[in-house]
Image 1 (tube, one colour):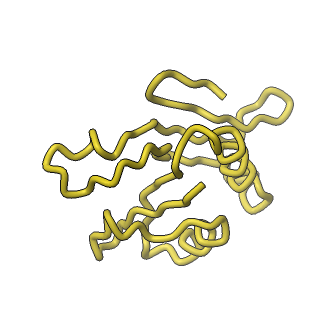
Image 2 (cartoon, one colour):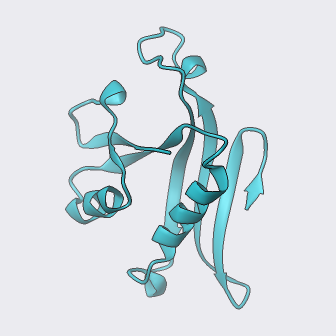
Length: 119
């Protein structure tokens, strides 16, 4: 895992070949919204990108990277956020299986919703 003050990268490799990654940033939700509409004091990891090479999908690579992120950050953050394409039922089921749920504070009732996992 590569980590700076505001961003992180988790990679999955096999024999030194990259097969997947998660890229994201740490966000204080109080500082995110200057209008204070969505303020609740959470400090979160916001997952910007998740990618797994096609040949390695459906064997647990993404799940294991997310579980690693949770284990690594459980003591440091309130939760993990991401934006999900709700028209992709398979993807929604994947995130829900890992314990993510729609975040009511950021609910838009659109195709792309914010999902959150409390830690």
